[in-house]
Length: 173
Image (cartoon, rainbow, N blue to C red):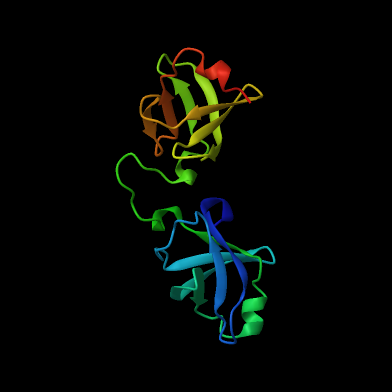
């Protein structure tokens, strides 16, 4: 397994207690259900998988116990490390909903076949997310709404948009 094949799901904040429990921060913050059975942590250039023994929310904070991490010293050695999971371990979403990592890197083109560029970032300033597309050295923000994003094919790595007149020039960053 290579790090580029994994998705960041959070970060280890610190150890909690003497039994190896880890206090963690999950991304996105609304993710509260422990869907992962194995998580991966990179340490000293090596990627290692850990079986999840326990996951709980206490005092509005997520806590994680990993098989093989049994002491405060072992847990502290992982402080600040990124938590990674396999994309195929994520639960399926309702039709029309996507994880950010599924859209990043997708090629964006217009309904008339003009290639704009790739999605390099997603911004969620309110209820509607914006795709940030790098196009010819510029960045364009495109609202991620059905009226504009006509086809989203994460498996095919492509998003087809039908932008209203002036949108692409208006939303250049």
